[in-house]
Structures are given as C-alpha cells and as structure tokens.
Length: 476
Image 1 (spheres, rainbow, N blue to C red):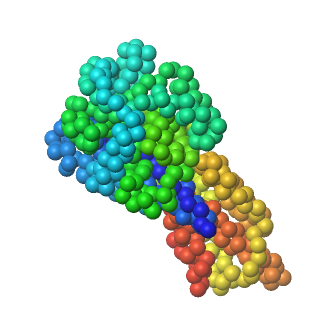
Image 2 (cartoon, rainbow, N blue to C red):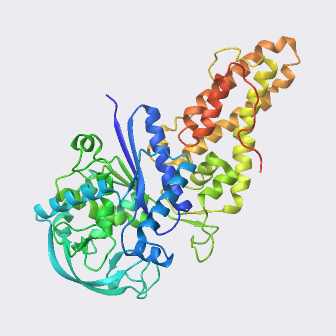
C-alpha cells in the first residue's frame, strides 16, 4: 500500500507581492513533495494565500483599491510566481474561497459545542502589522519587537479559546515527540513559551470588518490567525468530504518560518485537540535570512522578486541558488553579489560542463550511442535521508562532490587522447558507458531540486542518438 505524505507551506499574506522569502519556503516544500512522489508515495502539497484581516484591508486602502480586487490581484501574483518556480502544489488555497469558509464555520461551531470557547471583555496591546496582541514584557522598549511600532490599546468584547485548559496536553505531546518540532533549537524555544504563562486567546474580533463571520455571534468576525490556520484542514475537505479529509490528515509536515511557530506549535494543536482531531506529525520552522548583511525591507529597497531571479538564472538556477546557501533550519545571509559566481562555478562549469562533455564524446566517439551497460564507478551517496531531514544544503553538497569526481575522472583519463589510439577503443567505450551511467544515476537525485535539468538529462540519454545539444546553463 502506498504511503501518504501531506506537506504544507504557510499561507502567505496578500498585503504585498511575493519575494524570495516566500519562494524559499515554497521551493523547500516542493523539493519534499517531488522527492516523496518519486519514492512512490501518494503526496498532497498545499500552499496558498491568507486574505483576511486588518492588515490586508489597510493595504488595499493604501493602494486605492477595493479589498476584493486587491486580494484577487495579489493572490494571482503568488500563483504566477509559484508557476514560474515550477512549484508542484496540488492545491492553492485562498481563505476567501467558499470551501474554506464552509470548513471554518463547521470547525468554529465544534469548538463552541465542545465548550472550548467563551465570551469575555478584552483589553490589550495590539500590533496591526502582526495582527497579534502583546503584553508589556513582550515589547522591546515599548515597541512591537517585529515591526518596531508602538502597539495600540484595544478594548473589545471578544470570544476566547480556553488555551490554558489544553496547555498540559500540548506540552506533553511536544516533550514526548508525539508532535515533532524541528530543528531542536525551535523545540526548546517552544517549550520555553510554556514557562512564560500563556493565557487564553481571542478567536474573534469585534471591530474588524474584512474577515469571516463568526457563526455563534453575528457581531464578531473570526480572528484572522484562527481561521487562517484552518486552511490546513479546509484544503482537504474538513466537514465537507470526510473520505478525503481522513485520507490526508494529520499533516506529515507543516513547513514555515520561525516567526509563526507559536501559533502553529501551541495554538493550532490545542484547537485541534478541542475538536477531537490529531495534531500535525511534524512542524519544521526554518530560520530567517538577511540579504547582503541587511534585513530585507521595502524601505531599504533590497527585496528581491523571485521572478527577476528566474529571468536571470532560470528556474533551476534560482531553486539551486536559494537552497544551497546555508542550512535550512538556521538563520543565514544570502549574498546576492555571489549569485553569478556560484551560478557559473557550480551550474555552468561543473554540472553543465559535465553533461556537455559526456554527450559530446558519446556523439563524436560512439556515433551517439552508449556503447555498453556498465555501472558508474562513482559512489553516489544516498541523499534521501538528508532530504527527509530537510538538510537540503547538505544533500546538494553531496551531489556536487559526486559531479566534481565525474569531471576529475574525465580529466585524469583524457578520453580525447584515448580516441586517437585504436588500442584504447575498448577502454574508451567503458569509460563513456560508466559516465553515461553516472548521469543516469544523478537524475533522481537532481530531480527534486532541479526538475527541468533532470528532465533534460533524461531526454538526452534516451534520445535515438545522443548529441551535445545546447548547454544546460549558459555562463553569465
């Protein structure tokens, strides 16, 4: 029986256009989805956009647009960008879709029926940028630690989720590994939050106009974070298609950046427990990256459009450059100035040159046909384990070490000299057969990361006659 693998990215805010931060998380999820499909597993890959809340409505207003038109426009930008990056998602979930709303209404009613929510007055410090409440001790010199603005004091009558009631169970699940949080530093960070005295949280907002209706109280809208988290279950038919939902839930991996770990690792599993659902199996929160030593910011003008990267480096070049920079779980700095150098060295000179050399020699010396079926002498380290552990940079390092060995094999044997010696014809045929086998073995390792390149190599090897053809990567 085929195993199932359900992978999710966070759904991205549509208050602005996609940047390489969104691309980074989504490409990583795509590598996992492609890898597990290649293994023969049944995969469901979810990404999408979060389209409600104050922040989105305010952005629409600043752009002199109606909010519906604004979210349609920006959601389309995300879809186009992900198509450009060859993201193989099975669904693009928008929180403005009718299906999402239907599932959310059912979930909220179940929370109410379970006695997990109650009505109360609330007063708190609210950051519009985060769409989250802060206590005084959370602030950095009186400012929101993320957006560096003074939060506003908000007084409202809201509905609250009884988080404190479910905290011991959530903490126990994390400590026991029933719900895995990775990397280990992030798990420790989450466990530290339990010691800070987490309180019940608001699931509705009284003053927000752009959001989903709360089915229990028509004066309220559902708090944007609460309904956004439910996209993970609405996308697979929660409350609408039990067969589909039971097939995929729980998620195998929720993938995200570390800034939203609290909502995913504490609030979300607590709400799931309250309605009798299992928590996700794994939550992986990767680090932040800076760009050329600075935080990415529209103000600084250093936000990179992934579509511009694709235009310059190609789809597979962009995917490679983003995932090979530093360990996926850690913070790191992306040096844009080194993109061209790394592209030329790793892609044009190493991988591209290897494929061109092998195809060219088979065309010239063997009439375009692989002489024999011989195994490659180069050991290709199994990278599956590294991909499953989300060690993408390590997986790529191992692949490129093998590519370097194949190029060294050519340089040390000098097949162009062997071709001039009739006595070395057999030796030449064996060498080229081994190199062709190496390229064939390389394809499934490259495919999750660089699907177009993998397809080009397969196409070249399987052609009636192998020819050098166009280079995989043109030097910049």
